[in-house]
Amino acid sequence: MSEVDQLAAIAAEAVAFQQQFQSLQLATTDLHGLPEASYAAYVAHDQRFYVYVSELATHCANLRNTGRCAVMFIESEQAAAHLFARKRLVFQCAANEIVREDAKFNVVMGLFFNQFGKFMEVISKLTDFHLIELIPAQGSYVSGFAKAYHLHGQDLTRVTHRNEQGHTAPDQSSQQTLDALAK
Image (cartoon, rainbow, N blue to C red; front, side):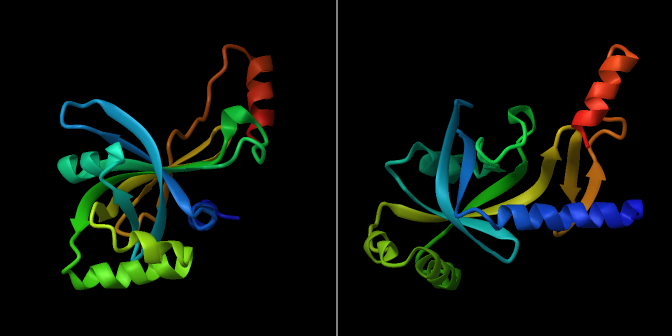
């Protein structure tokens, strides 16, 4: 398989990996730079992620006030071949609130209803909840030990190696061990 075909396969693998999840992990900061780690249920539409979040959650104010976040999808510890090499997909995103009067609000909320069912009937009416659009600007995908890639381009499907040489070891024996882990 050519290098181009390999990278295209990695892009497809990253998309399939993300589609396994119904929630995403969020990294946000407040206006003073204080970090907050959290998660939210999400839907994807037109290469964007949407979260419907309550003002009771710190990340709601952070997203609305700073307009940015990072999103992560990560393989479970149980499914991982090795804890030091869990598959993970990370995006740096711009964050914009979609107000209830916007036509896009109803389209995206329809996706939430399809995905999460009756629970949405309750929370969709709560006025302290806000629909936030997360627009990925760049990303990275780690598919295993020493298998790290940048995702970029308009639809984030252009894949390049993060580091062409992988990990470096102090001696030949250690390098052989690293190479075996990367297979």
